[in-house]
Image (cartoon, rainbow, N blue to C red):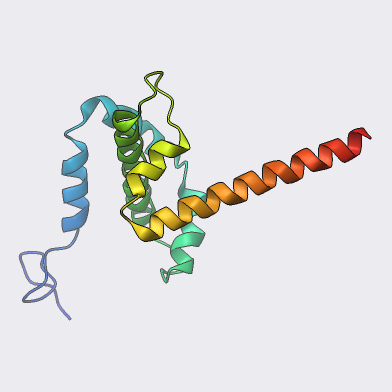
Length: 139
């Protein structure tokens, strides 16, 4: 199928990169965090982890570097926004976010709520297992 002269892909489809432009415009509203965020993206902190995840969810085996960079930007924006909201909701004024702050944020999303609880349960089980293993070694 040929693209139209205006960059759209068909009659009723939006032009390419519309989503990317919207995301980038949204991050321009937060200049103090944006500078730090851009430095992280340049380093490709999540790229090596995102590539297999993207492949596992149906992307090509060799992804376009721009696609990986965009996904990394989306993930980092989501994490930064979530942490900012958690800090705003936190009763702890030392600037430290606790698990309860994140649980409060995801309480209305059943999938996220279940996943957070599952991860916290696994973390507790691992800590208990390590503690039991250390006690056995000391004996």
